[in-house]
Amino acid sequence: MSVDALDARILELFAAEPRVGVLEASRRLGVARGTVQARLDRLHRDGVVRGWGPDIDTTAIGYPVTAFATLQIEQGSGHSGVAAALARIPEVLEVHTITGAEDLWCRIVARSNADLQRVIDQVVKVRGIQRASTVIALAEQIPHRVLPLVEAATKG
Image (cartoon, rainbow, N blue to C red; front, side):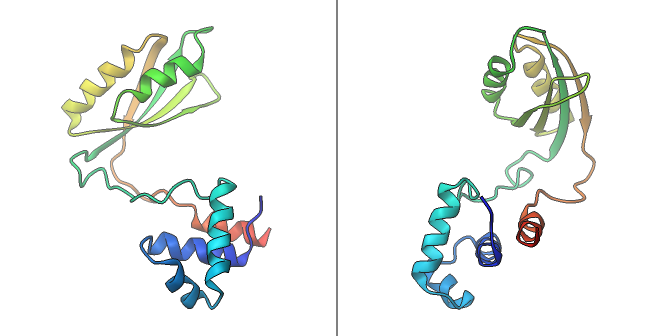
C-alpha cells in the first residue's frame, strides 16, 4: 500500500489533533468530507492506521522508569509461547523477535528502579526464558514517531 501527499496531510492532521472531526478536517485540508472519510477508511482497512486511541504518557500514570531488555530463550521453545506469557505482564509494553545472540527485545516500564527489579523477576520466571539483559533509559531523545516516515514514503 502506498500513501500519497493527501494521505500524508490527513495523517499529519489527525496525529496532531486526534479529536478533529472529519468535517473540520475536510475544511482545513480543502477537500470534500467524503474524500477524507474514504481515505481514513482505506488507511484503516489497509493497516496504515492501527487505532484511534489516546497516546498515553506512562510517566503521567505513574511509570517513570523505562528499560529495554534482551531475552535469550531456550532453543526449541518457540517465540509465541514466551511472547504470550510476556503479554500477561502489564509493564511489558512491546516485544520484538530480533537477530543476534539474543532472541527477543522488550520495552518495559516500572514505577521505580526497585519496581523494575520486580518486573524483571516476573519476566525471567517466564517458562522458556534462559537469560535477560536489561538497560535503563535515562532520557528520551526522540519520542516514537512515524510522521517523518510517512512524508518520506510520499516522495519515494
